[in-house]
Length: 299
Image (cartoon, rainbow, N blue to C red; front, side, top):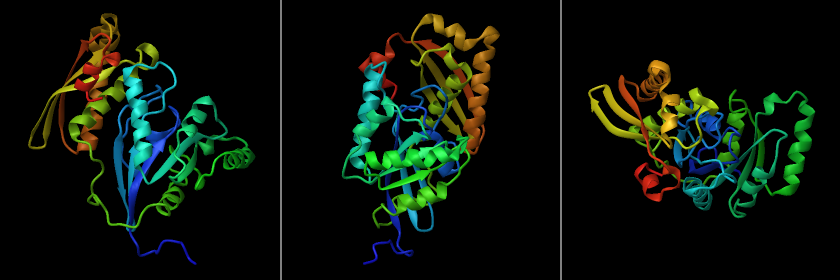
């Protein structure tokens, strides 16, 4: 009996992208979508929210759910909430992409593997496979994981270079339910521009300050107005301590100016119109472990 899906049938479903921090989950989503939707940086736990990315082809609609990296250290109210998000997403989707780095598999990866549900198809996505100097290392690595877990498919990719992403989409489609598209073919996400503006600004803080500032930084959009093709955005960058403000602002305000300029440019590219962005820094001590503060910031 032929169980392969008909080429004329249309498939649509949800796909969770999970893995430890910094394995390239958001980069993978962005390159599949062909747009910078999910923010990226080398700082662990850059992704904090459940984010839906929509990719539609002639015969399928892929509803990707980018999730925070599963956190094992620095557990506070924020990180507990993100771990709950990961577990909730895993219980709701049709397919799971478990993303790992080629030849690297540690305790954090194993913890994510332990929470994967048995009844949902899980695809092992071996990212950064192009960086291996000895390509012969890849097959034993794949065989080792194939013996440890019943993966529905194993696909080596390079998210950054968009290698083997078509093969990955074909593998995902085989496990999606046959049903019509849920969203329009031109839709990219279910998130509004206000949310995306906050994420873009937060990414620039992480990218331009690196280890100078701790993880506990948030962005609050205080005003978002649109006048024709112009968007006027007022945003506050929230830090935990007074001493962190001068680090973020920089000498003569240069650091904050650069953060704002690069964020504005990315917003204009994503929104397709001019952006007027005003930013400032606020101190809100202990916000990452304050349930009320987290709720006000959208966590």
